[in-house]
View 1 (spheres, rainbow, N blue to C red):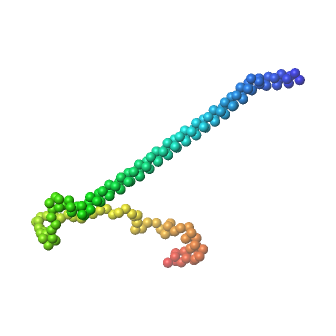
View 2 (cartoon, helix red, strand yellow):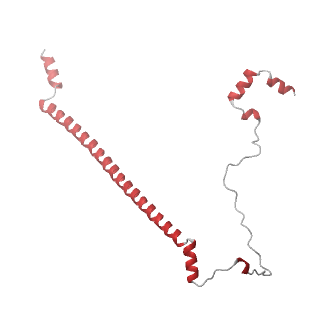
Length: 159
């Protein structure tokens, strides 16, 4: 019996060690909670900052769209036919009748040739794929052909 008491006494921990273990585990849990909370706050703050910058950029885009529309309206009013005619008269130009126009033929003048643009992009279709029909037929077509008309392959080979 004394041997058993010595054995359990030798392997049992002192009360202060048990208290240190409890305090250590509690501290570890507290540190883990603090780390998770810190990461959560960091991610949330970054998301909020990004959201605000997106809102600011959208506001800026709307402002630029309005400014662009104003400039387009100003350009349209400046280049209207009435405004252009008024400015031409101020510069000394006069309106002429279509019958009073004189055309001159200049010897050696080569008029502009029309530009040849590249074809618009689109899908390119090759004339032939180079594959046999055996390799381009789907599995469902092949099964339908074999089930509905099983003699068809034999007739094709006999041709």
